[in-house]
Image (cartoon, rainbow, N blue to C red):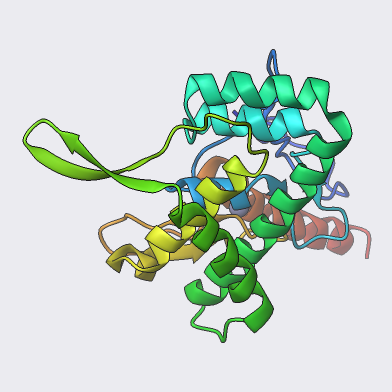
Length: 235
Ligand SMILES: [Zn+2]
């Protein structure tokens, strides 16, 4: 859960403060806010305040990445345990895997953000995403579920530290090739740029979270008005 804006009025000269603190500390790393509507969008949103001069990174350690995957259930419990052990036993290799994961995250952001705004998609970002999707595709297999067939994942038998990035990349490819791609939106909150799926009836959702970015805009307007009236009082 993210913190809510202060209820009490601030002095009229106060600037609206940023109120999002990402996740709350949990036993292993953070708990993440999952408001994106798809794993790939929640993955993108692990970088907070993206468009400000001080972006806030929520994936600082490999363990944070594993926590994200555990919370979103992107991988199985057994895979979570295997990757946690890997992070403890091979910390440098795990940090390198984290860097690869955040690079793929940025590629997903570039592609999905451009798609949401009907902009041209940068070739290198699409190529980076495509490469991870191809790797992920090799892990897909067909499964029988009751009377039906479905796509599934081959369980990880030997540790692959890139497992999570592949799942996120696959989720992005799945979304981008579906009709839901038209509903990808980028939050209009100042500096936010979180991505989400707009499932509202009239497709009018503008904020990642009304209680954070929506209120932030309201607060800005409120303080700008107060500031103007304060200035007028001293004239
Ligand atoms: Zn936002």
